[in-house]
Image 1 (cartoon, helix red, strand yellow):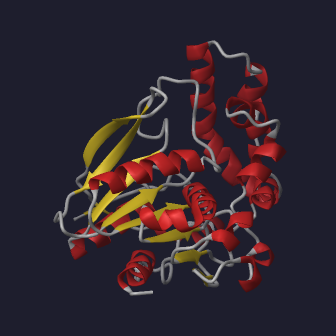
Image 2 (cartoon, one colour):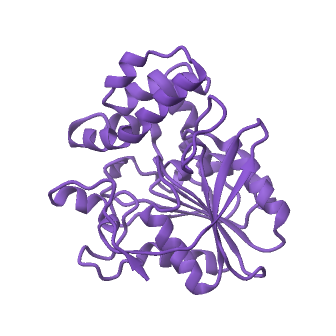
Length: 318
């Protein structure tokens, strides 16, 4: 079954359709089972599960900035898993599952500690294959975790894939603050800003509310809110410490990087080369695909390229 869908990134004109082609096409309808987990610090996260046979592999998806289980890439991947009779789960970062969290704490690009406890809890409940997929922000945090854990990651998951991850995070942050790309930052801020203001009011936090109410780029937002909320000195400090690129050489399990060369969040000249990644990392940088788009074309045909690429990698013995 398919449901009509209007991308949250909808804009008139061809440019955005090129960057987010998959978000303009019909989406599968997925029936999820919602589960809530208590976090070690007394908060909670929400997970949406796709049912499947208990003896089949489990694919864990970490979404991108302000994403969720209804994001186009999540629905398409879950539909492909359902057809294959595999299991899937979309992990919602704090505040992205539809309910405000209890603590004055959100999620961010470098939160590998959150990735760690989630994956280890899943592994404790699983005896079979577990694969992790991260998109954009979720891909960056996953790659950072893989590089930090090195050989220990093999005890937790079997393979990993990062899609449209900001592999040069400081560059991505500044790119989104210039030229036409400002429009993407403003679209993210439509949901980020109200969440931040609500958290400040709920916990009576000492943040610059007037400045947050008018912020119009991600550097300024992160400098005012994300960085200080999570213990970073500034937006630049946050981006530098959260950057997954320095960890790519330390990854020790089979990992696939998928980044389009026309992704506006990461100029193709900033994509890593073979000298910057370990032998366990495979790089796939197609010419087209925008940011987590990856349709075969824009006519509506071949829209399953990304989930099929994911499953092809996970299904091999590499």
